[in-house]
Amino acid sequence: MVQEQQLETVDINVNMGPQHPSTHGVFRMVLTIDGERVVDVEPHIGYMHRGAEKLSENMDYRAAIGFQDRTDYLAQFLNEQAYCMAVEKLLELAVPERTEYIRVILCELNRITSHFMFLGAFGIDLGYFGTSFTYGFRERERIQDIFEEVTGERMMYGYFRPGGLAWDVPDNFVQMIRDVLPHARQGLNDLDVLMTQNEIVAARTKGIGAMSAEDSVNWGLSGPMLRAAGIDWDLRKDKPYSIYDRFDYDIPVGSHGDVFDRYLVRLEEARQSIRIVEQALDQLPDGPIMPEKMPRRLRGPEAEVYAAVEGPRGEYGIYIVSKGGDKPYRLKIRPPSFCNLSALRDMTVGNYVADAVAILGSIDIVLCDVDR
Amino acid sequence: MIGIFKSMYITFATMMRKPVTIEYPAKHRDVPQRDRAFPILLWDKDVVEPFCTGCHACERACPVECMTVTMKDNPLHADDKSKRRKIVDEFWIDYGRCMRCNICVEVCNFEAIAMNNTWAGHELSKFDRNDLVLDLDQLLAQHKQGKIDEWVAE
Image (cartoon, rainbow over all chains, first blue to last red; front, side, top):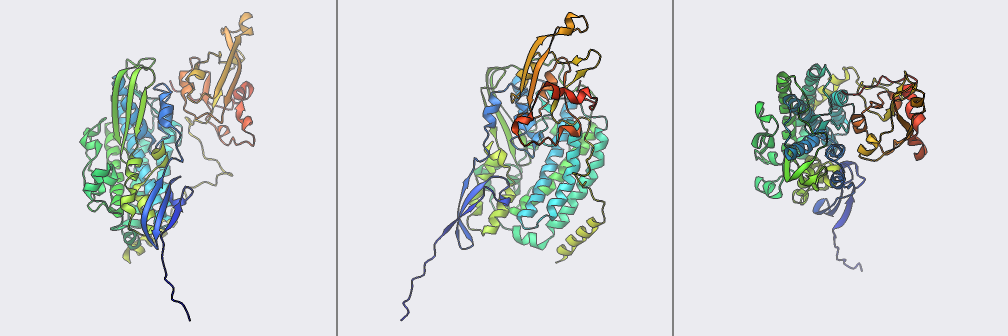
């Protein structure tokens, strides 16, 4: 006689990362799965922790610029911009007009490169292997060459200084960018056709990992994640810093807050950045790049300042507590990736394992930014 | 279905474009004039000595502490051949630690240090970590032999 067996199923734990191609670095998450469905997610971060905040506290205000590049390594100019803005606020330095324009141009180009990187890597996460990645990288490389021509470095620029810039841009700066912008626009259009209208991409992304507007606000999301949920919040428009109030551009907003909307918002944001760059190039004035009364040693008063920029991933803020002297007493970085990543569990639970990869890709995390 | 055909069209259109890649180890692209590889020391050809006086300015400013400098009395100054009273005695830079931030070049009062802007500054992989610590002769060699058109921002 065959005894009837009581068959039982159990949830199993699957370890994803830290060495996993689709976790964008060294992010580790332990998925509890029931068949194909994700029941629970436990993220483990900290593999990339280098103590960027503490390192910056041990440097004087100028030397710490080098460490700001190394937090969010896809948006280095924007990190430098946030840090310089905080130091300028602390020391009450007036930034010259030309410097502001060059900063805006470089920051917006940096946003385009970062979004190209996202569009490329996002394709890989969806199983579009290599196609979108090579397309995105080809156009990104052209802009990267401009950065190399201006700053001399490919990744860790270290170009902004509190009060101004390290040195002036080359003579052919404006022409160089004007030559590249059509390529960037063409690259975005290519990716648009490759991915937006592709039925497979739509099937993989529409309605996946949706966050409501209310939840997004409660989790403290920012950047394209928040705007995809339908909330029109962009620091460039709503808390204008630098000279962003002089340009005419739109803030793309999604409606569903799913993976597809986040992708669309980023694609459109890159196009708007091209518009800002074009306007800034037209208005670029001549003049000095450093303030006239620049102190030789940067010594801050006893004060606390916070400065934030709208990075490609969200609000990137620097909080400096100064007790006098040439070093900050405490420097806190508000990393957009970390705050956006905190909502991962809410988005992932209930979806398939394959969708977990797509959702993680749509957050567009940079692990150096998460762990600092 | 239409979307997939449109994607295929983009793919085939791209096949007609010129390639943008370079076969790297065989060919090298031009590096820009401002290229920042690793710091090197400059050689004063008129006086036949380094520009560097060993003043420790770069050593103090370096965020990653990759430099070691010592100073000595300049023998050429005693013979009235040089205006530099002090001159660099020993200079080491650990390229393994250097993060190429350009701060040493900016703080230098004598324009004695510059970033290597040639391909010689890249492709420096070594089997032994200690080989990445360069001494004074090695740091001066590039400029002494006239291989570098240095670029220092005003």
